[in-house]
Length: 104
Image (tube, rainbow, N blue to C red; front, top):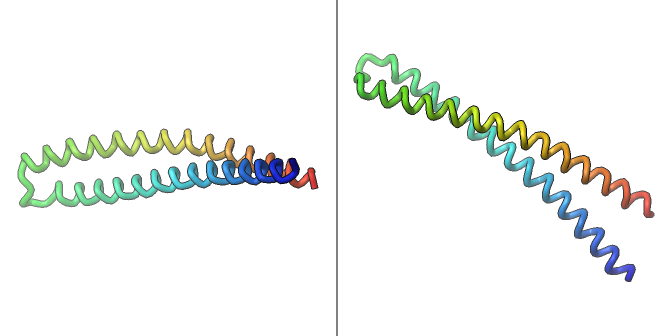
């Protein structure tokens, strides 16, 4: 019985740590994607003002910029949700660790 209780406790601790790590990874991935979007928008801006850029190319760039802007906004919203998820996951982990510590 003690072994099973300890095993389950360790398993629960691992699940909580993994949940926090997963949220952290998703947040970091979203920030990386946003940085990539910012770089692409900068590149588009430079190409837009180039004299050799055609009107058709500019139209394509405007469309692409709008798509990138929407995606950036989506990522910002996702990050806000993930930050709340992270706070909850961290709180659960800290509470569980405190419960384990109190049992020793």
